Each structure stands twice: as C-alpha cells, then as structure tokens.
Length: 266
Image 1 (cartoon, rainbow, N blue to C red):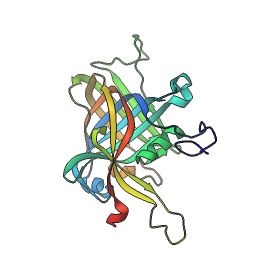
Image 2: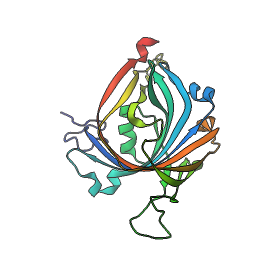
Image 3: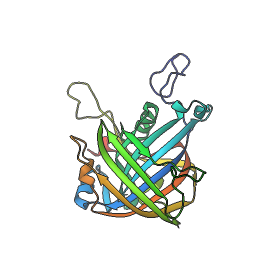
Image 4: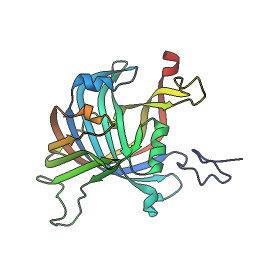
C-alpha cells in the first residue's frame, strides 16, 4: 500500500513532498498597510466575496517550520523559507475576512502545503532585513529608529520593495491579517471538454491554533510595486501608505473550514 499525505506516495511514505499535518511555523515578519484603488481590489475577489475596504497589507516573512514528529529545523534547508503575501480586505456573508490574491515562496514544500490550503503560491525570491542581539552597524535596533527593508523578485524581475522605520509599540497587528483569511482551493480538470469545469473549486477559511505573537513594533513605511511582464500585482499599487510593522509570530495548522463549493454555485 502506498503512503504519503501528498504526492509522491511511496511504500514508506517518507518521499511525500509535504508530510501529514499538524504543521508548526514560527517567523519574523515585516508588514506594510496601504490603500489601493477599490475597483482594482474588487476585481481580484472571487465569487462569494465582497470588498470590505480598499486597505491592503503586504507581508514579508522569514519562516522556520516543523512537522509533528520530525525536527526539520535541524536540517535547515528543509525547514526555512521566505514568503511575500498580499492580503485584501473582504467580506464573506457580511463577516470581515482577508483574501490573498498573490503569494510567493522559495521552497517547494511550502508551495505544496500552501496549495493544499488554497494559498495561490508561486515561486519568488523574498529578502528581509534581519536584526541581531548585538549592537552593530550591520543590524537595526528593534525599537525606535530601527530601519528595515524587504524586497520581492519574481522570475528575475524586481516586483516589490519596502522600507519601514520603527517608532512605537502597537497593540494590534497589521490589517488585514491572517486571523480570518479566506482562500480559494482550485484544481483544474484536464479531460477534453471539461477544461472550464474544475475538479475542485471552493472557498475555504484558514483555521490555525496555538497562535503566539511577539511585541509588535509600528512606524512609517514606504512601498513600491514595479511593472512586470505579466504578473498583475501592479494593478494593486498603493494610492496611500498607512504604516509599517515588525514582529514575530508562531502558529500551528492542521484544519480547514469549508465555506462554499463554487462548482455547485455556478
């Protein structure tokens, strides 16, 4: 009998790209809140979601991951990855949620876990400034005056760059955030005559547990989104930048809420 949570499934199951949940994460994050043209943001929402406001957030995260019964962080190439996430402010049945139109990672295992959850992951190169517990010209302070930067490149094109200057502790996370993130799980059908009838097409909601957040630093921010030959993120260029954030957080994922099957709604 073949074993494995995801492909490839094999006799022992250890070759599966993503192991069985639960999946445990801890990360250092930079985030920028900004506003976009509301019509442009609404155009990215799937059926079943409505625009709540024109406020967006871009997250740049340096992650470390572990499964339940393995210590992948002892083999860092299996555990560490970088990610850029764009979230829109939306509503599902009048309840506020976040929706992700774009997300980029640099590891195939992360990409697979994300596709299982409905995150529309692609490959991209994300870099963020690190802070260290030693005074140095090479490290910003995590405190007033600390300056941090982040960049995203996709297929050799610089797509996003951001800078944040910290000034104060915040009592809230950036908005929108992951707390009520809603995704679309979509898997197309290849059989001739069914290319427009996906095998899976559903709205789902992220369900995480054991969430922990460090002190949240807030300050001024700048973000630029550059033209790209075909990626449509420039449609969500900022019309106004609100604030930037720096924080660390941890969470565990092993569940998902199915909200609506869009195949039956069609």
